[in-house]
Image (cartoon, rainbow, N blue to C red):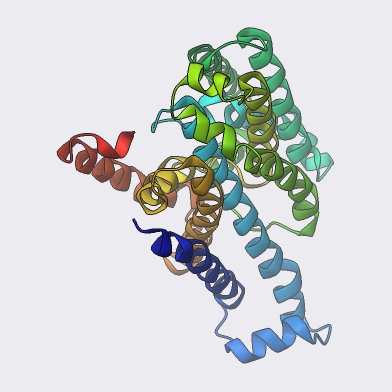
Length: 336
C-alpha cells in the first residue's frame, strides 16, 4: 500500500470511530429522534431522557471505545512482539485471570454487597497473573518462554473458574457467572468508566511506545539487540501494558474475544505490515469493532439481551477462518 494511502488510514479510522460513537449515543430501544437525544445530552433538563443519555448511553459508548481500543492495541502489540499472527490478549493469561477474579466476586457474594467488588477483584486477578507470568518466564526469557508461561497461567485460571462453577451451591450465582463471562457493556455507569479508564490509558501509553522496538524485532531478536532495541525492556513494557489495558477491559466488560485477534489481521496489509503503524491503527479499529458490535446487540433481538461477547464470537470466528483461508491461498504472505 502506498505511503499516501497509509496516511489516510488513521484519519479514516478516527472518523469511523467518531461516527460509531455518535451512533452508540443515539441508538436504543426507545424511539427518540437524534435531535431530541442530543439536546437532552448537551443541554439537559433533569428529565428521564437526560438521565438515559448521560447515565446510561454515554458511559456505555465511552466504555465501548476504551475496551475496543485496549483489545485491538494489545493484540497488535502481542503479535508484533511474538511475531505470531495467532497471538491475542488472552494468550498470556491476563483476561482469564481477570475473569477468575470477577467469578470469585460473584460466587462469594461480594459483588452484591459492594458494587465495585467485581471490577476490583478482576483487576487483582490481572495483577496476580502478571506476577505469576514474570515469575515463570523470568525477566530475560524469550518469546517462546513467554508463550508457554502464558498458556500455563491461562490454563490455571480457566481450571479455577471451572472449579468455582462446578462447586457453586447456588444455581442463580452460577447463572450470573455464566452471563458475565459472555461479555457485555449493558448497565455500566461512570463508576465503571472511572475505574477502567486510568488503567486502559496507562496500558495504551506503554504499548504505543513499543513501535520502534517491534519494528526492529521484525528482523529477528539478534538484529533487534544489535540495533539497541533492548528486548528485556520491550518485554516488560509489553506485559505491563497488556495487563493494565486488558485487565481493566475484562474487569468492566467481561470476556470479549476475537477483537485483538482479527483487527490486526484486517489492518496489517493497510500499514505495510509495520508494527509501529499497526499499533494506533489497531486501537482505532478495535474501538470501531466493539462500538459497532454493541450497536448491533441493541438492534438484534433487543428483548433477549444478546451478549456482546457472543456476537463477537459469532462474527469473529468465521471472519478469522476466512482470513486463514485467504492467507493460505496467497502463500502465507499475510502471516509475516
